Length: 78
Image (spheres, rainbow, N blue to C red):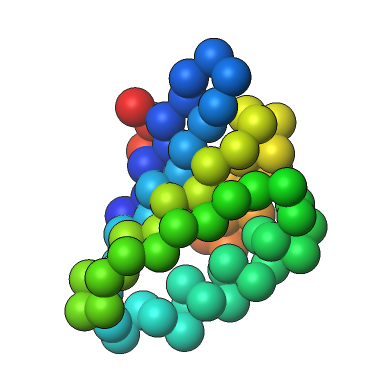
């Protein structure tokens, strides 16, 4: 699973890329993120290689990033 954080001035993005075998873990993380920060927008693409793009205000996206850190995942910064 690869996670990239992209920050613009008014909007930030988390891009999560994973394969079909990691779908359960990705779905669990998405549920947890969206329950804690409902103002985020999520777009999902792909089936075998899933790409999830989480966009929103940088403060809310950083909260989502903190949830990913708690799960033990490494986030790359771009």
